[in-house]
Length: 149
Image 1 (cartoon, helix red, strand yellow):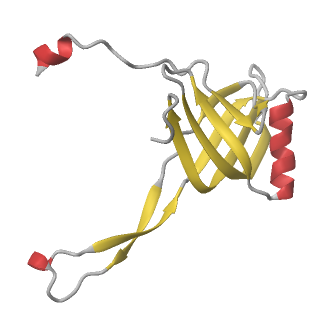
Image 2 (cartoon, rainbow, N blue to C red; image 1 turned 120 degrees about the vertical axis):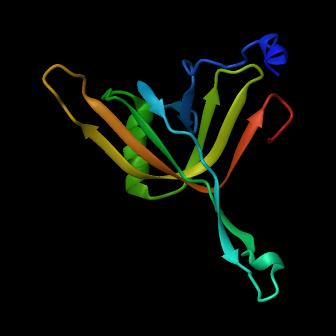
């Protein structure tokens, strides 16, 4: 197996250039964008005659999770300031995470801003910024031009 893998090119892509947009506005000066992690709840459907005494389950509701953001606060960054407005409104709005991959890959989703933070000021540090977006509904991962993955 090592011989087969040795001839393969590394296909990893650097994260530099990844952006998240709220509508058309890029949220700037970010140092971290958390990934979307989809989970599913399950329902126990075990019966007295389940094979081998093993529990059985069915998948129920799916959850798109949360997207935490961290970066440096920029008072005139339209995307950062829009996040506080979104938190105040409480509405689910459109977001896109764009990866610098070939072919292009994106996550598109609706989300509700559940936290917004400016601060954590230290003597020899920059002013930090953070927010959390709760995914609302189904997130869609798209790669290239062929639709959802």
